[in-house]
Length: 223
Image (tube, rainbow, N blue to C red; front, side, top):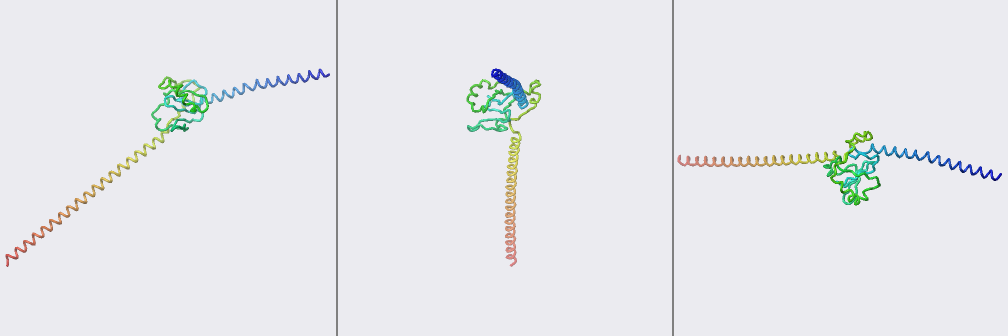
């Protein structure tokens, strides 16, 4: 009797163990499938100037200008006065660079700028490399959406506002200078008119004196 109970308990344990193994075997493919879905979704977030051949990207590193780009959050990281700044756009001084032609190093790690010294040394040989094919120029169907993901690296509206402001300021200065010149010219004209008026008065005075002298002379002769 005890032996049969022992065998029954043993069988229950074996069945329970088999059930656990079976459940684990079915769970792993589901998790792997979810991971693959997340990886595939990251392709749509990659910018059109990103390199082809990567299903998932955390960051791009640009050896030419020593900056990083966070693909998932759409943020640039650049160094300024010893600190790393995160922003949607790069400063205006970067507007002359073309990210479509620059080489990008794919980095799948957290806070890569912490290892910037290592990256600058490790990827220095990619500076000036223009052989990388970008997503915009590929016909791969996996990039059919990201091919049109034209992420700007400089805020053109800010640059435009600064240019307009500068032009307006210059125009105001020109207007002010013109007004000043007009005022000076008017002052000179008034001074000339005043001088002419004074000369006219002096001339009239001289004429009057001459008339008086003539009158006196005539009177003297009459006497």
